[in-house]
Image (tube, rainbow, N blue to C red):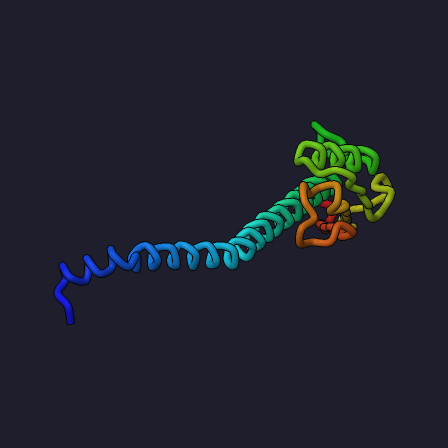
Length: 153
C-alpha cells in the first residue's frame, strides 16, 4: 500500500479526489430534492392547522362573551340585553377578532320574555374559506362553528 504522499500524488494524477467531491455534491443535491418537498409540505400544513385552531378559539371566545351579555340580569345600573343587542355585540366581536362571514344564532330567539334559570345558547358559524389565507390542507368548503351555553341569572 503506497504511503500518504504517494496516494495524494496518484489521486492528483488520476483526478480521483475531484471525482469523489463531485459525486458527494450530486448526492447532496439528490437528498435536497427528495427532502425539500416533504419539509415544505409539513411546514405549510402546520401553519394551516395552527390557523384553524386560532380561528376556532376566536369563535369560542366570541360565543362565550355574547352569551355572558345575553344572560346578564337587569340591575339598577343596567338593563338586560335584547336579542338584537346580543347579535350586534357578537358581530362586533367577530369583526374585532378578524372573523369574516360569521353568522350568529341565539336560542331562545326572544330574550325579553326569558325568565331566570332559562338556558341561553349562542351559536356561531363561519366559513373557513373566508378566514384562511390558504386552503392547502383543510378543504375550503369547511364551516367552523362554536357555541356557548349559560343560564339567565
